Image (cartoon, rainbow, N blue to C red):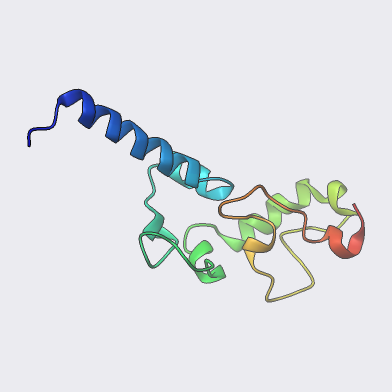
Length: 110
């Protein structure tokens, strides 16, 4: 069976739009930089939470704390990148495939 170029083009477009639809939140930003899912996820299809150690391979924690000082007023004067929890995952706020959430607002108000 010979596939027409039109069919191949439509199939490629559908696959591309599906992969873009899957990328939301920070995943969308990473995909826009042509980073494959395996940069953050072990499996090409994801399927597990991304560990903090993966995030800090590219994102410097000290630079994040400095950047967090600029957004303190939004968070009751707290720096969201210098939380009082040592084990707070980046994914608590920066959702991979969903819009960001203000995790701190759960206790500190909105």
